Every structure is written in structure tokens, then in C-alpha cells.
Image 1 (tube, rainbow over the protein chains, first blue to last red):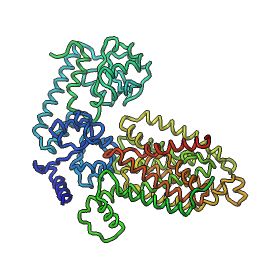
Image 2 (cartoon, helix red, strand yellow):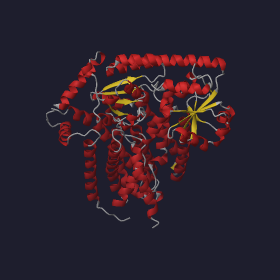
Image 3 (cartoon, rainbow over the protein chains, first blue to last red):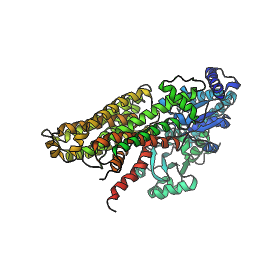
Image 4 (spheres, rainbow over the protein chains, first blue to last red):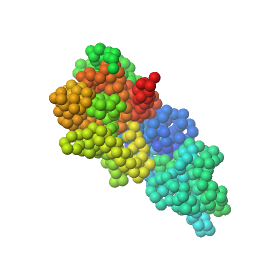
Length: 290
Length: 345
């Protein structure tokens, strides 16, 4: 019957996951985790995706797929109803009992690292490439990614010779209101450092700030990410909701950079190098492009 | 209050409703199973000799996902409603809620300590992380309730009004402690905490189900035995005393049963609001205030309500899932307002 052949195919898929041949590759994918889904798409797996979680917002086409909810709060039956052959996600995916239920239903569950570093990305890409039958493409993607990051490093080092690192605050808000400030141990902080900025916030995690302490830090550059609005609308909302921001040095000098908040979820994504370049161009004006 | 429904008719109706809820809870879900398959698997589970051909998937989904979930819903709904009756009886106030004696806020504090503290120590180990969370929530609920009870006691007497106020104060205190943990939490932990506070029957497993089933069965068997005493208490504490009821013991039992039952329910499924408040009310509207009817009928009604709410939770946004607390509050809050405003018309 249809079902038993599917089960058989799944079993084969499970056994063969280490030495896959093109015919046995999983064809129906569910992916949880923004960066991961982007990589699946970048490796040509977009057409195989049958469902993604709420953090998977890029590329645009993924928004049309059935949503399996938030990656930490998945529902076993919901995912099974999409009849996937494989569920991929970062170690943030859960809760664990749900994952084991999904595994018991014969669905291959593959966990990837959400660490924002290159070794983790390399092994993630290799693993994904194998599962998608696109190993060459995966290693090429990784090489060019590494190259871009290396160039970024060179660019930042060079720029820092001529200009000091600017003091930066990263504001994450929702339609402008009560933004949280990104401190240490956040993906925003990681981005900031790679782009050559100096994070003025010294706390860990994302925390609300009083307006006064925000002003006293006197940031040279403001980076903001808005979860609800984008473009000029987001910028206008930020200054409308927090008028005091207009008096910061950053605002007076017009050094306010917008960041896509989906970049901050789930490890290194494919759009990161471009965004880093955009940030460092903003941090070191005049040194852009050699 | 007039009795709309005879007790016998009420029990028959509620039992049928509960059976319907159980059946729908087993038969419906994001994965659509043929009705015949569901029936065959259900009969197989009862032990009838039915050939398992082609039933692997149905068996897995029913046995591993929907059945534990249904049992969890039954136990949680039943015990929450029962505790609601106990609290409304104890405080002699139909707007009382199991949260009044601090069990919910205590459990929330326990959970926050487990979630945030656990992640500070590098994440809860996968194997017993969920158990630790449940245990902390359970102990937190018991602990705060015990404290509320102690504060309400003076000279061997439990003053219900003092207990109520102590409950409010400790709830606020626990709330601020939870707030502090929320502030300390990182982004991921925050999401876990937020979802826990909305409750869910998602991910029910037998290993975590047994303690709750045992406790709720115990509470469901014990409390109805005290129905007559609760009826007497409706007249007032001294009146009940004159009728030969050991009021102090009754209060102790009510608080203990509530702490145990709600603690276990919250530990297993997170915070689920309004069931304990609304269900006893509904039953009282239908069948009057006699605890001999109210207690067992509330168990059935609470279990049914929670199963129906869970159906909405799992089907409304499938394949994603709504936290069940959103659904119960959505049903419960308007009903509560209706109760409040009814007398004014």
C-alpha cells in the first residue's frame, strides 16, 4: 500500500543517511530556523520544502508555505500532517519530547548547530549538501562565504587604521516602541564586532534601557532593527516613539543604520556578508571599497 | 438559585459530552486519519483482536500522540475544575479561583527558577530537564500554598479572609520574583517562559502523565466525599461547626487537595486559566449549589471543556499550534464578565 511503501522508503532513508544515493534523498522537507531555511533554499532545496517555522522569513517564497509555529514550541502531529521525510532545525528546535515523537513516526530529524562561527557553518553546509545531494554546491558556497568574511575582516582592519571604531548601540524594537538594547552574547553584538563597531552596551542579552542612560552613552552610530516595520516607516516610527534619540550624536550626524531583524536568528545566514559590508560602510564612512 | 436540570439528567448529559470530547480528541488532529482506522486502533487498544494491517501510522499517532494528550486533558481539566469548586466552597465566594491560595503563582515561580536557572547553568540536560521543570513547578505551588495557609492561621484557627489577603500578597510577591527572572532571562529562555505561562497539552508523554493521573484520581475520589461538609460550610463556619463538621480539618483538606491537584496539573501542562473559575459556575447555573452534584459534575464538565479547548488549540492554526491558555481565556473571560454583569440588568 501507499503507506507501507512510504514507511519502507523512510526506513531506507534512515539507514542510508550516511551514504546517500541520489534516489534515496528525502524529498519532502520541513525546516525550522531562519538561517537554516535560507541555506536549504540557497542549496536548491526550496522546492522540496513543505513547511517552515515562524523564524523562516527568507527568501520571500517561504512565507507562503504552511507554518509549523515557533521553532521551540513545535507540534508533532502538525508536522506529521505535512507528511515530511525529514525535519531539519537548529539545536534550538524543540521541545525534546516532540522531536522524539516525530522521530518515532519514521521522520528523519537532523539537528544543526546555531553557533555563529565558521566551523559550525562549514559542517552545517556539508551536512545539508549531503542531504540535498548538492555537496559540490555546498562546498562552493562555503568557500565564497569564507572569502567574503575574510575580505570583510581585511576591510575592517584597514578602515580601523584610518578611523577609530565608532561607539554603537543596537536597538531592537517593535514598530518603534520601547526598543531593547543588544548587549554582550547576542547575535547583534557578534555582527557589530565583525563590522568593526564598538558596542557601548555592557550588559548581556537584550535589555530595555532608560532614555537617560541611552543619551549618556552618546552613541556615534545607531543601528536599529524593527520587527514590525521596514524602511523609512521603521525609521520614522523609531524617532517618533523615542524623540530623545534625535538629540544623539548619531542622529545629528545622520548615522542611523537599519538592520534586518531576521538576520539575528539562528546562526550565520547567507545574507550576512552583504549586511556586514553595509554596516562597516556605515561605521567607516569614506573608506568604503578599495 | 433554581435548578434547571435534574442531577440524573445532568450526569447523563455530561457523561455523553465527555465521551464525545474524548472521541473527538482521539479522532481529530492535523493528520487526518480515516475514521475506520481510528476506530480499529481504538478497539485494538482496548484489547480486541484486530489485524494491525496498514495501521502503523494510525497506531502511532493515536497511541503516542493523541491518547496521552487526551488523558492529560482529562486529568488537568477535571482537577482544575474540582479545585475551583473546593476554593469557591472554602472562600464561600463564587468568584474564587484556585490561584487565590497562591498555588498557580508558586508554580509559575518554580517554573521560572527551573527555566531561567537551568539555562544559566548551561541548559537543562535533555533527559531530565522536563522533569525538573515539572518538579520545580509542583514544589513551588505546594510551597507557596503552605505559606499562605500558615499565614492564615492564628491560635489554631484558620482565618479565611486573612488567607485570602495573604494569598494576594504572596501572589504579587511571586509575580515580582517571576518578573525578575524574566528580566534576567535571555531571549530564548524568555520565549520558553512565555509559552509555559500559556499552557499546552502538546508533547504529553506517558512517563510524565502517571504522577498527574494518580494525584488527580486521588483528589477526584477524595473531595466528593466531603460534599456534605462543603454544603454545611455554605451556611457559615460556625453554623457548619454546630452541625458537627470539623471545619478546621475541612479547610486543611480543601487547601491541601487544591495545592496537590493544581500543582500537579500546572506542572504537567503549564498555566491554564479560567477552567477552575468558569466550570463550577456553569454547573452551578445548571444544577444548583449542592456539592454532592457540583463536585462530580464539575470533573466531567472541566475535562470536556479542556478537551474541546485543546481541539481548537491544535486545529485552529494547524500545522502550528495555539497555546491552550489562550483558548480557555478566550472562552472564560467573556463568560466571567457575563457573570459579573448579569445581576445588574
